[in-house]
Length: 189
Image 1 (cartoon, rainbow, N blue to C red):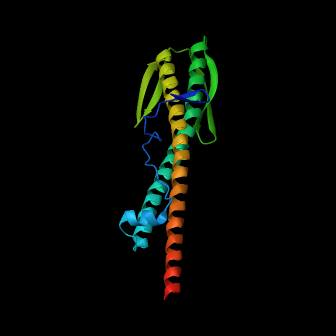
Image 2: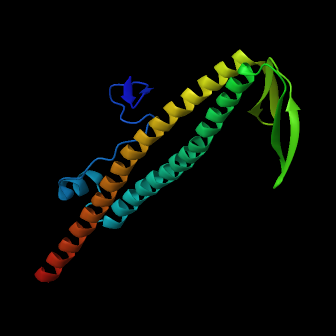
């Protein structure tokens, strides 16, 4: 396992460079040889279209990673607040007066008696009642999982940025190859 801060990341497989299995872009060192290998030495447009498709796929993956990171960044503080509330409920010995939000800008005062259970939203309009210890354990596990997933996504986003850059450089090199080849053909004519 790799570590980032106090979060331990799962270990990547031997050939794996990203947790999401993002394919690695190969840097084109010799454009002329690359064009010959592609079988379309004369058809630069087809090669550029293929590289553009690869670039678009990487950009789509990047969009998905960014949105998943945004959701996790919102979820982690919510889980931490829920854990704080469970600690308060565990330490509560008598009725406690509090306020809660009823609707926007409307708060209600209430007395909360000591309790041994709490209800948690699980998603998909499902709420379950848990004993305080079980709820705390579940929330801790969810928070830890969210932190690990966030770090994995950050790693994958960095890897993806490199792939996007490599693809963009490849596109520029193939385009420049085409320009030079056309200039050479014009000079011969």
